[in-house]
Length: 292
Image (cartoon, rainbow, N blue to C red):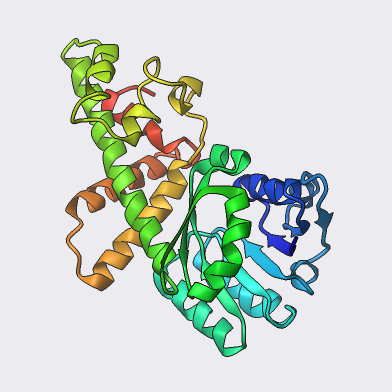
């Protein structure tokens, strides 16, 4: 079993850290919100990020943005980590920052992976996340058994930054699909059609996708989703907006045509601007239907 420092015990980090403890790993956690850190039964609560990073086999981070990740690794983790500590950043940040930090870590003798996740809070709690991993093959081989405790699918996507790149591409596709499903239900409703009939047909026809069959934004049809719970977030619109912003920046740097992705970004920009950053991202259907 590994000794693991886990920095960033938010909605996602809580479930992830709990699964590491349940698997028998020796986990030390740190978060600025000390109450959340104390929620991890069986883990040791560190008084600082430095203490969480010191002397561990592996340090995992789940933090809100690229500048925060960069500062924590440069000022807190790398200066205090034991030689040969493996760094795994599960935050969703820009590709360039992930590459730069991996290069800096390598220059100091550390292996660093970018390993963003998909699956939301439910996946974190259940240990069924999907990990998209960028970094060296050697680092991935060390990380895979630990990541497999927290996820049902762990994919090595390439060198440093590849995990972040795959994550933003995936979430751009997800956002486009969610909006297309929302517009389909909104149109059917305005035509006086049964939303259940649309679900029954499209979920078994060419319109089917995860945003329809698993996470339908229309309440009252299909499996129970956030739509049936007042759009309480599993994945908040503000987080989707952030990921789409990263995708737009990457597309501009790469010269990629992402017209539908930009339209999705603009839709979530309006949603966040209307004060709905904390609403589930499937709540984008409310504007399409003209309901609060």
